[in-house]
Image (tube, rainbow, N blue to C red; front, top):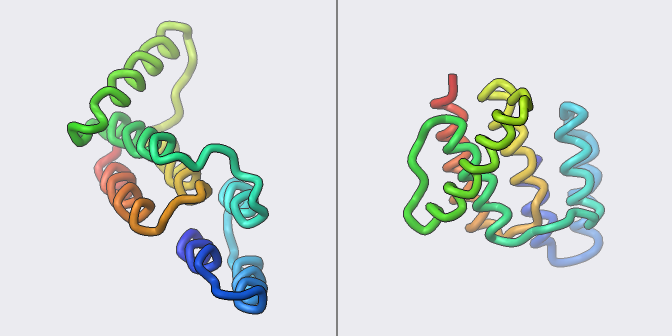
Length: 132
């Protein structure tokens, strides 16, 4: 579904976009994924910045116990502080695979250039496969 939305973003005309919208609506998706991706389809998604997307990949790596690339170490330290504060505050964290699944959905929902999305998606998928 995310790849279809990437194609929709690059569609050359209204007729092509409408065909892709119809194709998207026909895809069977879990409710949480449909809601997030429908927001992107409608153009109502919030922050589509590169840093917001990188933050999602770093969160996935942190959950899976994987290292993050050097350019993202400041983001990782910030995420580690936030996770520690949440744990100390008694907040229950979701199961690792569920948390990473939610991060992948959030990444797909962000309006990003396809090449940027592909690189970050690969990091999140690697994290998902390593999570217990």
